[in-house]
Image (cartoon, rainbow, N blue to C red; front, side, top):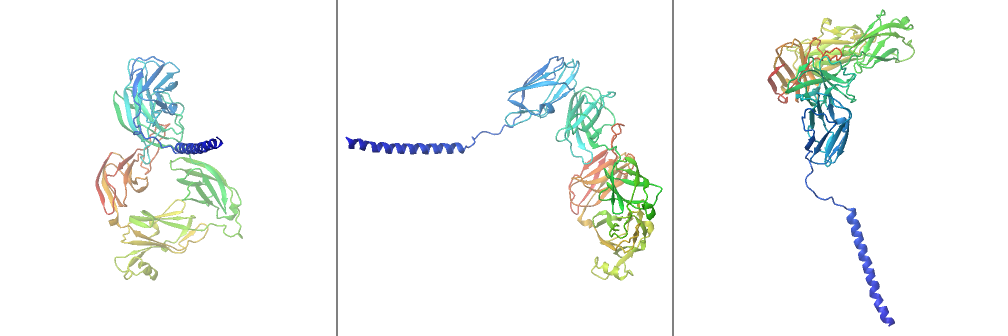
Length: 579
């Protein structure tokens, strides 16, 4: 019996061991299966936006006097910044509730009588699956027996580059309305889309003034510094669509430059302003004061001490007259106190440097006609024009000196045939402060030209001399470049044309244009361009902005994209531009 009992226990223990092992294997497989989930396969993504199936009241209802409206869709919806996205015109406070497929708006005050209300939901409602937005979801009703149906469509853009501007508030104001857009919200307005387009529905068939401003702080008011545009005269609407309204925005600038501070630098005084200067002058009995406007940082002006050392010890009263690019002028009384120079201290005086730039070219490449600009680090007191020399190829051998003969080898591999020319001083034009020199010429050249300024050609107001400067300029090869030409038909008394790359860079400019005439841009590199035309009402050869408070609009700027890309050696001819 004992042996039998023992014999029967052995297989039972073995069986239990196998069972526990099997259960452990199953548990391990289940854990791994749970830890490595595979997303279920399904159908295509839902790309269909919600569609309205029912509204209360019905769209375009008249004589509505309810306290709420309800919209029901064909699928579940959700809100996203509805308070910011939903535009109700005219504005009225409301509460809202989204539940499954429906949206309910409850008005907190009674609706105005005989008034058309329009609702634009923009991107405030989406479906709950993929966030699809109902396109151009709008709803309108009237509390009177008539629904206003006039519509305005248009586009907003940056006036300086014609790129679309989004989130621009376009206001429609009835003439004679006492509303002030910088102090209160307009009664009728809409907001531009991502591509700059806008639609203003359900306006009355009346006259409206139109304003547009980039409402960056979303307060629905015009704030100084925001880009703005407005029409010069009101528009008359009818029961139809007013299409293709173009509003080009630019910020206004009516504030003159402000002085941030005066700092002593070595023996000079540096004035720093809050914006770049177009012009600076000193109105002072002390005519010995000279200055330089920093070309690389036009917010800074360096004033030089008087040459009379006895005057340096005293405070010098003067008046600075400054002007910015928008013609805002400030007259600033100054009291200048210079440091007494330390005669034993080295480097107390700035070096006297000059920079040569080619006018009508690209860097060191020239195009015909051409000229030069010479900029100085100090005002110039004396000049020896005979030490300014131009070396070019000659049509016949010339009696050039040895150094000119050597320079000629840069242009030819044969015997030197060059012409050395020192222009008369009467051909040079100085700026008012004698810190910049201009020279323009029709001098014919074939390949290149060198401008050589001998040592001591210029003496600064601090009696230091300029060093030897020599710079070679090569003529652009027209055969490797393109050109653009055509005819303009216009009644505008004054305008100027600019050739602009699509990235906004201005590469050439034609001024003094009037009414109908031909135009041509030469030496054009390969690329995509457009032509920008500014209607220059006051003939000052620059664009002038608007004055919102005086209702003076900005000068118009027109854009004409070229039909083809400019290619090497190709000419785009016969363009017809009409405005």
